[in-house]
Image (cartoon, rainbow, N blue to C red; front, top):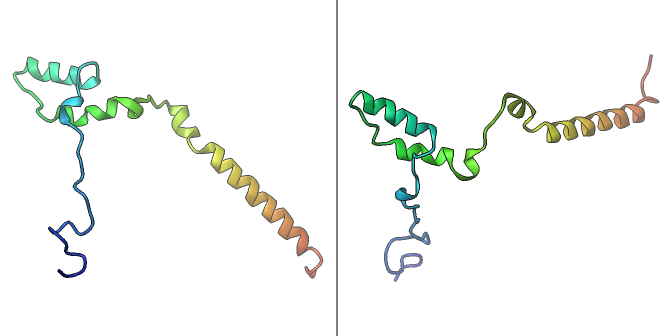
Length: 100
């Protein structure tokens, strides 16, 4: 057999396992309210379950305005301190080389 083409054509990739769609429930999420409003009009969103993951697990954290503004502040401030330190250090090194 040719190199890389043993038994099948997977090319070294295993089959990706997808999570079971039944694990996502809209009950207890804002999507449930949407479904109720649609049902009052005789409608239904068959794809609502596909968005339920956004309200479960680690994705379910509420984001406040302050939280959104301060996201990354720690790393940004650290980068700022490093930049100011580098500027100060390089400025002091070049102080003698400047001609007025």
